[in-house]
Image 1 (cartoon, rainbow, N blue to C red):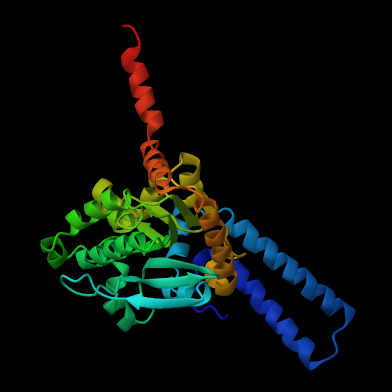
Image 2: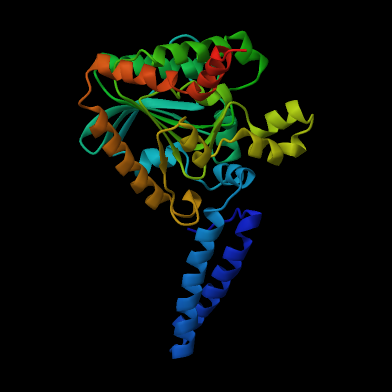
Length: 332
C-alpha cells in the first residue's frame, strides 16, 4: 500500500524505495542487464536491513509517533481483517452511543467472542464522531454492560486499546467520567470469563485502563501504554508540551519496558517497517495470537480465572513494596 504520511526517521527507507521503484520501472520497459538485476537485489536487501535497524532501535518518542501514525490500522480495520463476523451492539441504556468505543458479538475462526475496541477514526468526520478516540462515560458503561452480557452467555472478551486518554470535557466530568472508569476497573476484575486486552496503538491514561483489566495483556511492538500522555506529563513536570520527548523517555512506557517490568504479558511483533506498512500481515499475526491466547485460557474454571487475574495485578510493584519492607525491618 502507498504510504502518504512519512515520519522523519523513515526518510532513508523511502529514498531507497523510490530508487528501487525507478529501477523496476526500467526493468519492465526494457530487458534488464545482469548489473541492473544485481543492483535491484542489493537494494531490496538494503531496504529490509534498514527497516530492521531503524525500527528495532526506536527511542520512546519515535515509538509514540509510530503508534499515532495516520495510516496505522485501527479497530475498524482489524474488525474486517481479523474477525469472520461482527454484529455491533449500541448504546449504554442510559445516555447515548459513544462512537469512540465499538462493541458487539464477533467470531474468530470457530469461536464466538464479545468484542470491545476503541476507535479514533480516519477522516475528519469520523474523528469528530469518535472524539479522536477519547471515550465518554457512556462509552465505558456500554463496554461494561457488554462484558457482563458476555459473562452471562459464557463468551470470552477481546478488548482493543487505542486512545490518547478519556475525554477531558466538562460534560464527561459531569456525567461521571472518573467514577465510570473506576467502576470498570473493579467490575472487570470480577467478570468470570476470559478477557484478552491488546494495545494496538496508543494506551493513554485511565482512558486505556477503563477497558484494560484482563487475564492476558499484550501490546503490539510499536505502541505505548502509560498513566499519562507524554505531552500531559511534560506539561506537568516541565510546564510545556515541547518537552514531550523527555517525558516519553522518563515514563518507560514502550512494549520493551513494560514487558521487562511485568506490566504486560506479551509483545506482538509487527511486520518489517511497522503495522502501517502491511495491515494484512499485522492482522494475521494478531489473529494467531488471539486464537492461541483463548486456547490457553479455555481450560480454567471461573474461580481459577479470577484468582489468577487478581494475583496478576497484585504482583505489580512488588519489588518496590518488598524493598520498603526490608528497609523498615533492618535494625538501626
